[in-house]
Image (tube, rainbow, N blue to C red; front, top):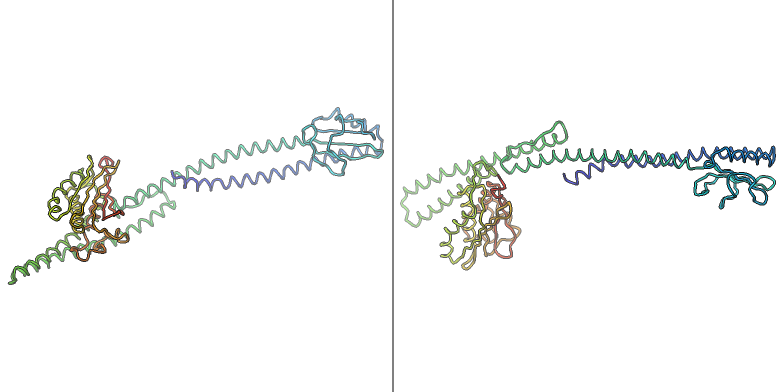
Length: 441
């Protein structure tokens, strides 16, 4: 599963969790304020009660009340200290007045023996000092317990959210992968007639409907274009044949007749090439009629066939062929592909130049490369050479119609291969990359 898909869905799942955590923090802050306020109310009531008792019954009664509270109450929950004018402890559950606690009218949060307290210190008439404190430890324990509960729920939400995100992302990725696999076959055996897989009434199904409509439209336009091209190429053969027949009846000298015959044959070959390209484009990627062939052996045979021609013209053809270069292919079509590439090299090289034919096994792939030492082609025109009637920038003086590399492309695509014209330091090269037969089993 792609990380990007999971991250996107996980982010959507985590946003509510982050908002929930923020809400819990706000709730905890408000709850603490309310609990402290309740403790402060209790503290104020107790401190005022002691002060009123002192006003009514003086120090003896106050001392007895504080002593009673100190012995009967929870010593960890409340603290009491009553001191005389000299600061000596008269009653309470502390040995002395805690450090850092000043007399003031409001309650203050302090630490006594390492524990949190809310305390109120006040002076009584006659120079007596009174300290009353209520422990905040229960408040902190309650908040800590709440944090633990929310943390457990938060962790559970996180795990559930990530699991849900993983499930949703996996499902979306599977649907997308199926659609990608189907689209990848459009240029293969499935062709433009292939249709997208569907699952329920999701957005993917709607997308599949749009893609299917687009493919149907493209297929219609492509078929119309192909039918027109085939019809033109086919229909032009008949008048050309008639022209040749009528030429036979004319009294032409041998030179003129030979020239006309050459032109007519070249035109017929042109239409034959167009028909071949159209036929192979229609069957691009369809491997049902192909069988295992050794591309290296085919290349060696074609090179052997062209070697005398190259030597006669002062060129040299070299080969580098790996063993076991089997692919699914048509031997006749692959021989035509190699012939076109070698003839292209012979046409655009000079005496003394070299044409290198390489067939290499690279893992699950077989690469054919034909490179020459000729003048090469401008980089801006390199990829356009696979288009019908496209020619290099310096080919105006060379015979031909610019269909050689178009036929190479059509044959390569017929085999599910990828043709390209890579950049070279010198000359011109064509590479064709196909899957090894073992990778297609």
